[in-house]
Amino acid sequence: MSRLDAWESRTRTALTVLALVFLVAYAAPIVAPDLPQPWRGLSETVQTLIWAVFVVDYGTRLLLAERRWQFVRSHPLDLAAVALPALRPLRLVAALVLLQQQAGHRLRGHVATYVAIATATVITISALAVLDAERGMPEATIESWQDSFWWAFVTVTTVGYGDHYPVTAEGRLFAVALMLCGIALLGIVTASLASWLLEKIADQEEQAQAATKRDMAVLLGELRELRAEVSALRQDRPG
Image (cartoon, rainbow, N blue to C red):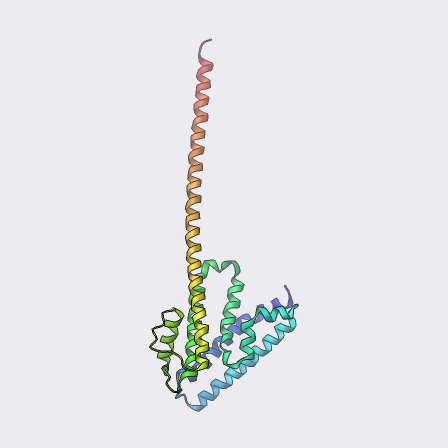
């Protein structure tokens, strides 16, 4: 195990918990715009401290990586989360992606769980980010968390009723990202269903082949017995 793998193995659980805490602290002042100032200040402090931890973690992993440029290219969400404060909630997605990668060969067996978690995470992050960008803007149609979650849900499913839509550049940027995520998730579900059907067909074919082999074995056994009986009758026949 490399030094980078050892570091990620030791810190993975703690960073995932911090990502969840960060998401709660990020969501609190957005969902509750009338949140008292002490709680709002606490939320911002928690976000800043956890973001600092993420920066330290990313820097440490970058130093431990044997091929640093390859590490940067293979961890775009991590870089975006520490470089762009507005995208810091993406660290939760990066943590979930890391957990899925660690699952490896178990991914196909739990694909429904991973898709459900990824979908819920994407919807939550997009709804919060768009509400934060849209609330209070001229001609805004997304002014409450109910509106933002409804918009995020119909957008990620590629339905798009058009009753709520972003009017700011930042909101539309998140909308484009959410649409792409929706298309990707739909592709994952379709591929998983196709894979499941192919496995079922293959299992049935294997069972049919096994049954055919068993029947052939029985027939061959009966033929051997019949040949043995015929040989015995010939030997017993008088010359």
